[in-house]
Length: 325
Image (cartoon, rainbow, N blue to C red):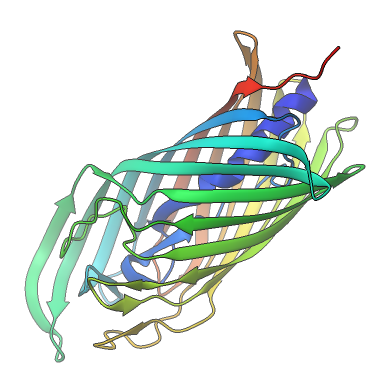
């Protein structure tokens, strides 16, 4: 049973990466890929064909000093402080466990949440004219839906997974406002992950690397640069129901931001974060389910917000095609 639960969580968790959050120096300091989602068992796929569900509650609080500027909604904003409370609902379909020799999964993620933004100043114009001081903006909004695909293989204890996410810019985008979940731009993330997962010893060592390719916001005419992300995690199962681990990430923007006004120039960002994670495996009715908590502290940041992030996830199967006896 523990192996089924672990595979279930490992298959659904990467989709939690489809969260728009203050993360980089791209427009709005928001990215498609969320650092911290490539953790334990990240490359482990669902063991059976079926339909799986994940609900992730996400809380982020980050800030930057008054002398740091960001582009938000086409405006240059100084002294930014952001808090996001959001819920990310993911449905994952596994149509085959023998596609190109591996397991194929496809799904959709829909973010709903309440971003709360405070800024010391909103600056506009080519000479940095001050428009307003001490601005607050908040809203309950639906973000852009994200389409996810994953293909994974297993060889003994080694699991390898190739995945992609596509941000579809049809969410509720509040023009000229500071508080948004929707990126309002096409974006594609491609990642490759591995997990050395040993049920007998309870150890899991996982890593994930990928690149996010960002498109242009047609309203603000801002073209965000591309980003590279790298993560690693080590976890130990202390019993059949409880596991505990550590995790870290490094994220770096690898190409320049571009816009018609060249608001802040290249404006490349970088961040390093570390954290811990714990998971509890339970049975809900007849279905295996996993609750997982993650907490991260960002240690260093360049051209981006610096703060803390918390994830609380529930993963469970809605339907599994059981093998014939």
